Amino acid sequence: MNIAVMFTLSRVAVAPFFALFFILGYRSGSPLLIFGAVICAILIELSDMFDGMIARARKEVTDFGKVFDPVADSVSRQTVFIAFMVSGIIPLWMYLIFFYRDAFMQLMRIVCASGGLVLAARMSGKVKAVLQAIATFVVLALVLADLYHLSWVPVQTAGKHTGFWVVGAVAVFTVLSVIDYIIPNRAILKKVLTPK
Image (cartoon, rainbow, N blue to C red; front, side, top):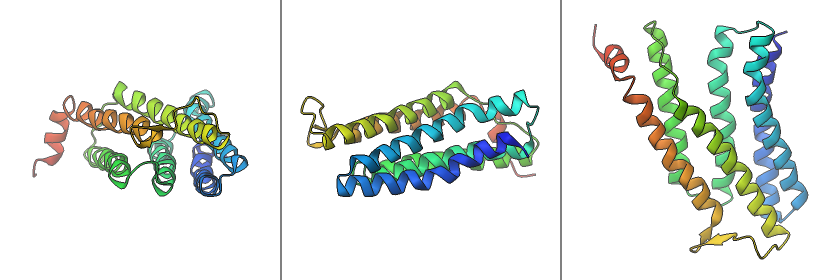
């Protein structure tokens, strides 16, 4: 059994439970369900942190794992942002920024791989993942603060849920990360887009 792949798979399996706990907890005002979502978010991040380390330590790095890891990242984070969107914390257009960014990057990786080329990883991609994780926990903290009536926590800012501004800032960086991938990899992208 490939333990690293199982770790990667675990965040895909846990993500729907995050959405279920968060949406139901937000709508019903249940701190217990929101804490359930917090636990799911922690498990997702731990999986993302350790699957690569485990694969290298156990010499279980596989082609499937290399492809599955970014897909699992995308699926789990998309699920988180869908939960925020359904709950009304972020609008559809903001969620679509994350969706289209991930779809574009998956397409580029597949096209480059089919041509025997590798799309170079960028630090902006790692920073984007960290910022999205931070935004997730900030939104969870804001929701819990509201449920526990902590008046010193600014749950609303400029007429919108503060989570809107937190996730919005990450959405802006997410767009910039796409540009950061395109510019240094433009020679590779030009090659795979040129008719043969």
